[in-house]
Amino acid sequence: MKDRKISRMAAVLKPEERQHFLRWLSAELDSGHAYLRALAEVMLEAANPDDATCWQRLYPDQPYDDARLRKLAAELTGYLETYIALEAFREDARARDLYLARALSTRRASALTELALRKASRRLERQPHRDSEYLRMAFELARIRYQEAVATQKGPVSLLLQETMTAFGHWWSYEIATLALVRVNHARLHRQQPGDPFMTQALAWIEDRKPDDRQPLLFAALRLIRLLGGDTPADDSLVEQIKNLRPMMQEETFRYWITTLLNHLLRQHNLQPDPLLLRTQLLPFYRWAIEEQAVWSDGFLPPNHLKNIVGLSLQAGEIQEALRYLDNLVSLLPPVQREATEVILRAYCYFSGGSFRTVISLLSGRQFGRINDEIEARVYLLQAHYELNPTDADWLYDQLGQFIRFLRARTDLSDSRKRIFVGRMQLFRRLVAARTPRALARLARDVNARRDPYPWLMTKLAARTAGA
Image (cartoon, rainbow, N blue to C red; front, side):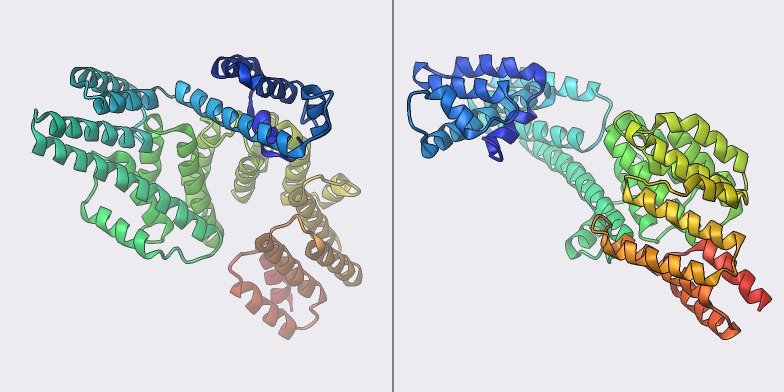
């Protein structure tokens, strides 16, 4: 059954669910479906068995019939889908509350519906999160109350209708804002225009209603959207506001907001470095995000965050602080990325401290499994060679040419990152080859015109221009 949907569905089951699924399936099937139970046992015993193995277990005395096996596989897939959906339903108390209230209302059991609605409301208010799922549930419960009042001709129908519309407005507004946040952030990352007529009009409608602290998540989402769109500058109050919203948000959503804000502040700092803001805002914020595990994922610190805080410390001139971060935090990285990340960051620290021979000794001859690590290592090596012997132009020019060809040939590098690295290395190659003030001036014009700065090269170019 390789490469069939049933194999992929069976692989989704957790080890502890397999026997439970077989018991559930047996309860669902009658005696005429024994072959489905047998196929399920084969699928769950072996890892992705082939068609011949499955057929042999089911019909050892009959010739292979692909159409018949496909029919059984399709039926079993349907049961697997139902089981997985039911398990998700069983684990979601709010979904059970909602479907129970809705089913009782449909069956015209008014007294039981009211009890179910009260139970669901109590459970909803006990949970701390006030995000999209909470708002949607509040709307659904309000709608059932309104529909009950209409059906039974009891209760304040007009008031319940207004409450339902208000609840829907809160949910819809927050959904639009969170989707708009993702859209604007994506557009910033990929240098696109986030223009979307519906999104623009919807956000304007929401803004016109002036959400405030009574809708804290919506209020913060709109502030973050305005910040990403360049409409407002960053300030500590937004950082503190989002920090304080953590108990009200799902951890995944909170991590996305914090990471989005950090990345925005990093981009702004790279475009317009401000030593004061670096020390007083960006570094303390990043330190908090790591210490409070606000940017962790699946129990580990993603390598890019360690790279960022080490890099920011080096920019602040705190080499020993950067090394302390590296020593203390490297064990928190995912195991498969730990060694390579540590080597790259130690090279970064040595390079920033002017220990260029140590950088060359550390990185020469090393190979890295991940393309981004390989690129960073080669860049540091070439820059270290330039720092030690900038006049060795022929060798550097040749090495940079080989590196550019290497980058262009890689299929595991995104087009956007390929353009950035190839562009930077082409500028580096021009710096090596420049012999006249006119060539340096043309290079300076092209470097300054780029949207992605290359700080090291800009420093070296300034030094060469001053000495020309």
